[in-house]
Image (cartoon, rainbow, N blue to C red; front, top):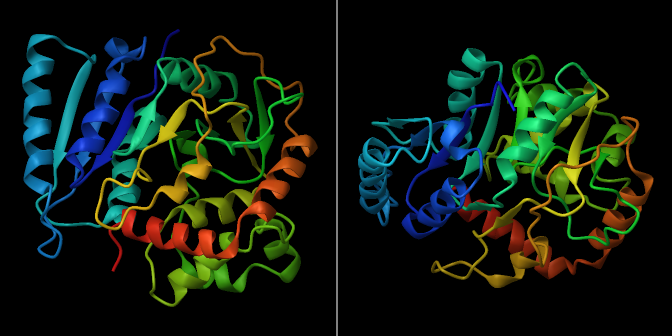
Length: 310
């Protein structure tokens, strides 16, 4: 496999999660051939715990790279100020993707399969010229995988281990007013998985009200305007470990979004056509409908805390 995409990893103050994420990434078969860029956010005076431990881990990683070279190269950007996760991700992707034309993006609570980089890079190469494919996701809903094949297309980009190309990302904008003014009731119904998952568009409303500051919902809205889809594996190549009850406010119910197994299959067979899987969509609707309202509210609050939002 040639022309590997750079990996962009975002970190702040979760040393245990970061260590697990890095160890899993090192175990990937393509790690030694991959460029790794790490954006370490600056200190937030209101949330200092874990900050220095993360910096120490990254300094140790630099030493390890000099001695053992677990990656082709590592560049760590130590931010002097605190950007917050949304701005850190947007600016970090901009800094790298325009140099390399594509990128694989991770946060510090994503444990990857040993085949993660194989899948991501192969899919990026496979769909590079298919503009209807907006992004490649390593995560997927924990649904029945029967008859889904190795992977499938569906409408929403995901942010728990994903990749994209510069000629898709170039359209990204975190423009709240644009989003409020350019989506009809019919559009919103589509965004909300035909009404089964209203929490999607509610993220935009929460951004508008200043309750949260996120970026991923805007990527979804822009993908929709381009009539684009995202490639998802039938079985995820990652595990989200942010919902592990390790922090003061962490709750375990978010684990319902993780599959019981992590995918190590590669190579894979891609869908014959770039159309949304009606089978996957129907099962995702059932999954969304099964979520009890109190649980989804708690999960959204947990996501807010994971994003360091106040």
